[in-house]
Image (cartoon, rainbow, N blue to C red; front, top):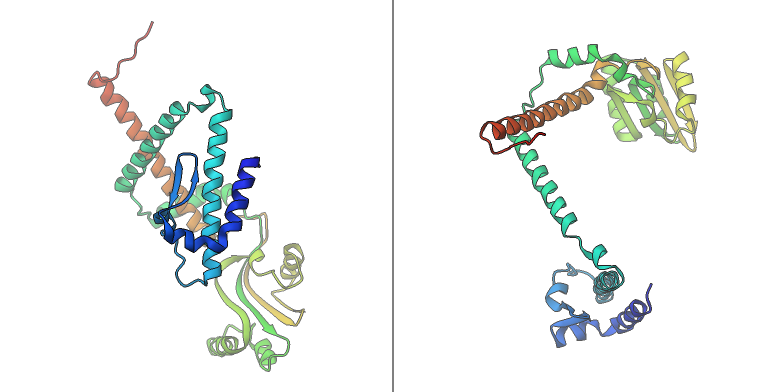
Length: 282
């Protein structure tokens, strides 16, 4: 950090206790060369509701950040060569890219068909099985985390494997009042989402669930109960339901790209037809 910057920051810090006096005695709060920070700039900070000390720290931090930016800019302008300081070409290129991007976004939003039929989903899934290989085991079932000291631990244990609706309703009531966490996993879920806190890693838990349809484990004061209805090990094709959102993203992405490709092709053809575009060949 330059000596000038250090001196300015030191002055700003020392003067923080007089910050509000300074703000109300004049419009200028700080100056770096020709750049001036005004009280109106400070007023944009939302410091209402904070204590005077916290407000002073927030304002002082803002002033120091403003000062550092200006000092670094001054340093860059004084140390860089004229060629390095000339950023007009880069700014113009960025402007062109930004305008094109905004127009393309608007063009796509106005024309994109977001309706995807069930047949399209299925056909894409069936045609691309290698794209849906799961790298983590997937399960559907029941997951419960309950304190070892809960008076309802044993009743929950007696019910969590049952799929009788009356038992499921009772289990839901018990878990609502006693469980730290619980999920009745109607949708496919990655094993990595439920392994946390059990003291097991994904590989260890998958080893248990591949040989058993349920698991009970006590760890650090909690009991974890898992009852599996369906299980897909890592390395297999993930179920269609699990992949549906990803399929939608891919199909919509392809449609967007097709719209943009069509836009570019039509622009070129129209420009050539109207002689707005001329390509000179040897």
